[in-house]
Length: 211
View 1 (cartoon, rainbow, N blue to C red):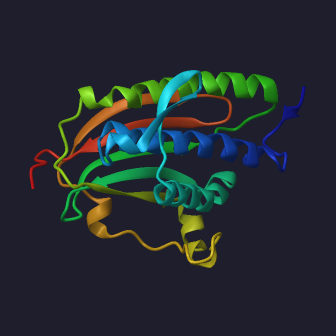
View 2: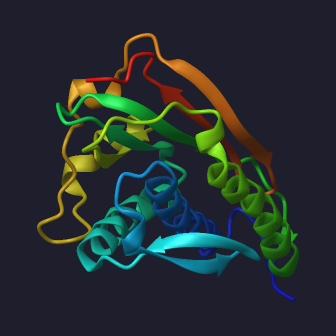
View 3: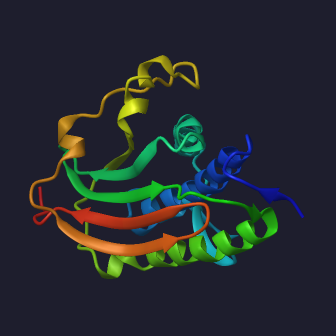
């Protein structure tokens, strides 16, 4: 049994691996449940002991993987405050924003076995909530697209332009219209507190979605 502490060099890497794997599953599931892409490009898989839908489209999968690969160094350093999946209408105005707000609490030590089993149970609850979120959201207009935004802590923001993890996949400042939504409806989906991460997921939904 391995014991990890916050001071361990690989602790941030372990947390980032767990969260990026979860975010990949969550993004695929959001795109499926909110019908951003046709259901025919998704296949049923099992993750965290529950059925999920994962895309089979190579270019879409690569975009999601590249995005998370670039986000991972920020999670390692606890510099990512929010990861946001923005669903936009044909005019590129947000209709929904799925916000994953996260922070890493202080930690003395924890066994890696305990960490993995406990966190898997908590992440399973997030996946189950995403699976049924269409029950509390209005239908989106046809022809929607999506993007992924990262809100970083102030110190990290100053170094963002210097960080290019993947060639030809640079960080760019988000469009103002992608970041803000006028008078959105706020729908809390799930909150978790564990030894390695505090995370809450909520949706900001535009009041009038018809374009």
